[in-house]
Figure (tube, rainbow, N blue to C red):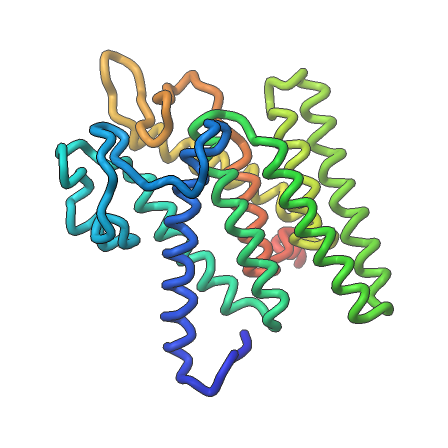
Length: 275
């Protein structure tokens, strides 16, 4: 962690947290309007009654809590994902601030995390990862590696190791996709693995993949255990359409969770088996 100014440390946390809330609010707009043909500059409005939202209705977290998750005009429920995206983005921004060493690295991490948040929610809702998001993540990662090399040409072995590790992780997931003919994971997950591998570094790609499978298994079992039973079926209400116990579960959120766990902790899974 680094300090940007001589202000007390808690000031920095407040600034980064507020930035995360604001960016999270914007990401909600991106998630809703992506691939709809709607401009990101249009006024925010209620999805039920269509009326424009006032400034007081757009304060991240606060408006949702004050309105108790309902539209001020028509009383319709506001999807809880808006609240979760804002809160999650703020928390991830704070974690990035604590674990990065330079301003350049922090900016890179915040930009990368912002796109990851869109990927997670979009994949949960639509079971697809838009190529433009994967390309954006790849561009950010490659740009960062170029910057690192430009700052210190002796870092070339590290850069090459990162690229090779990313290709190795992508190749492994491609093998799973090929053998299963797309039944185990989607090809979008295969493509996503490359920028995620560049983000965590070559030495942690294996840990990222292992953690993603562990997290996926744990979350899936947890959701099944907590799911509400309706007419003999188990429903998971976070996504649209609703997921049943027989539904295909998107893998990208688990892959991203494993990526962030490794990025924040730098914990090598192989150390668990070292005696």
